Length: 184
Image (cartoon, rainbow, N blue to C red; front, side, top):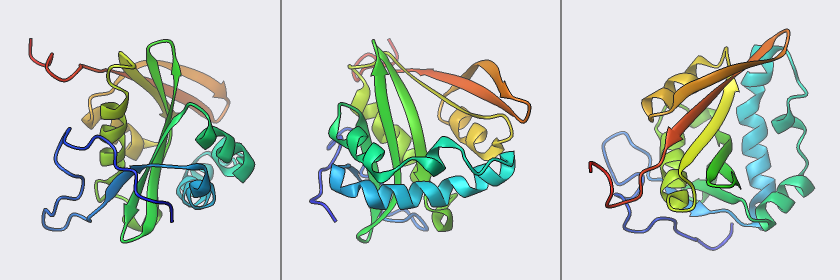
């Protein structure tokens, strides 16, 4: 495991700060050496999506370790969630002008529903606020759990895009408010 690289220290209470039933999760910057573990989590997380849409060749399942290492070595922001030394989730972002393009939010299947995905996304938003004015993302129209999470975190649907007979992408956006400017 790579050396800890904490993100957003002091910006909000530490993820997994001890609430009953809440796993103690550290959110850290990922490094190229994390590619293998992230890819393993990504593949495990996206199997259900592939089954839902009847497509075993969705991009997250066919991405190679070399491709992911290039992302990690580039200018993307990639965060990982670590629980007791185990990489249990990740999220990545790239930028287009002042917009954060969120992708590949993944959590290991055995820890779904424990708040890790929400914490990863919140940490990413903290990390990119100031560099980006908004975050955008997309998910499939049948991915109700994902859609509920994104709506709960303040993302609003902007449009839908039919990309195949079996798949319509739901595009969502959330404006980012720099610290100190919230509420007025």
